[in-house]
Length: 182
Length: 190
Image 1 (cartoon, chains in turn red, brown):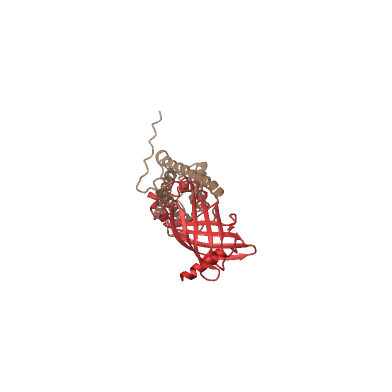
Image 2 (tube, chains in turn blue, purple):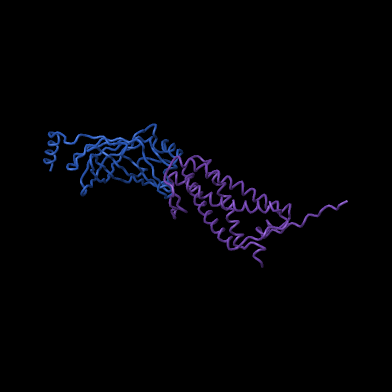
């Protein structure tokens, strides 16, 4: 097993990368989230996102991808909510301006379906998360759609009085779309 | 007992329940917007919206009841302009009973917050999230409910005028435990 892994690793180094890292098209991509406030789903999004992806569907295991979110670009219903979200109890944007997701492994999970695991860092806290996504190639673009459930309290998003999950639920559904050039 | 002489018990009950809920929601709305952003504030907004939906339903129930059970006639001493003012203000009150909750619901939808009655019954959003529209609807909702507050004050003042000055039964027929005041004794003419 180890030998095979070593061989694979050696092969990966020896062969020139077929797919070069590509930047996501930020204007067509999005990261949205749905939180439950008083049991009512409320959708928001981040206006400024960035990402670099090196992904070959035929060799998902060699994927390299990194995404960055400008947390200060949060878009919620109200200016009041946005101001609050940037404060120390929520994202603490002055101290932690960016959220980061670094993919560590991707494996196939059916036709056009994949599962990615990686390290998500928000507010200085890193947690491993797994997310499934689908692939859609059309014309000269590749669209990656996926989602995962984030437990906001694991990242201390909403501390003290905001840790109350009856007002804002712990589970936040994160939905994303990344559009890449093929 | 003649329906045209007095209000039905149902009409009286609905009137006072609506009075408590509407005046309560006006005061509650003023209070909650003055608060710092907090979990409590989010809860209070939800309660305000739930109460608003209740007021809307109650207004519809009252309107249906009123269409089948006409209000008793106004006192004969009232001048034509007073009758017209009374009818116009009652119609406007009903318009605002509906407009208050409706503008609040639209405002909330435009902000991206759906209204779920008592956290159970979702009211569909007519509008999608639209920040600029929300800013406009905020002013519309506030103006509507301020107008409602002013009109309720006028309504109450007019009822008191009927009770204290005219000494007729306009207030007491809506407040059955209260008896009309005896007619004023005019000072003897010299």
